[in-house]
Length: 217
Image (cartoon, rainbow, N blue to C red):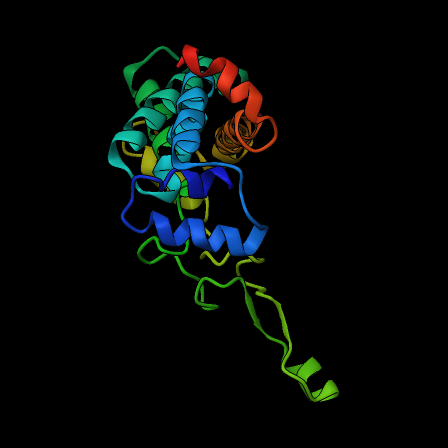
């Protein structure tokens, strides 16, 4: 069972999700207790990634707060690699705002209010040209969202968000702050991948390891 489904184990709808996973991927060797234990191990080994996944897929506010603290700490750590040195509180507040916006973007899903693209969050639209040529119903990747199902976000919102506290020109923002924001999003994706890998190592791929390390949780 994939981690984004496993985290719903405490949800009343989890039985339906487990059944869906069984139909999609075949019978799983994991019991409910196995999943809970594996999540505990993942929590101890990939806290940031698991918090990000909970914040993204369950919209858990506590997890979102944990993820934001982790992301803000990382943003402060790498700020000097991308941004001109500055020790003012306004600068640090702008860095914090960028981390907050990056987390919001990372956590957007098709069920986030107002996030769906014109394709309805499906990431694909009807291919009328192909349908007419072949006489069959055909689909193609949505050209607006490029398959994500989400309305694209512009970096203008980030620039406007920090301007009241730390004024920077558009060229400066594009040269320094935009790559900084990209690095924050990359970190979120990387932490999610790490958490997924840890979960798989202790659950799906190596159940014996899960039993051996359960005492560490």
